[in-house]
Image 1 (spheres, rainbow, N blue to C red):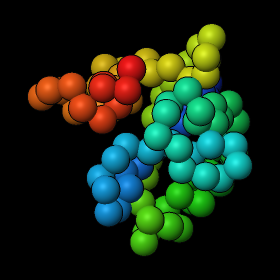
Image 2: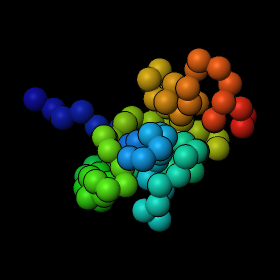
Image 3: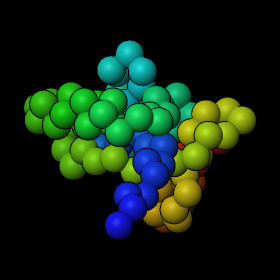
Image 4: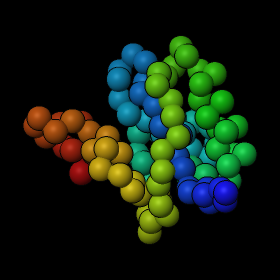
Length: 100
């Protein structure tokens, strides 16, 4: 039985106090813009980055790896859920939607 190839990932979570969706960048900082996130293309690196995120329980909650693809301006979601999370709340234009 063959193993599926690793697909590129991004580490994402929510800020503990504000609840905002954030992404881990290559410097290990949390950023609000998906396009600034680190696109991880190595399974070992992905596990290390997730461990880093999970080691910050006072800062973020719900850290996980999510599939992404390389885009012209940085990582792009491959699933609807992550596209929705990247654009912010949808009940009316505010937050990330108002900034666009």
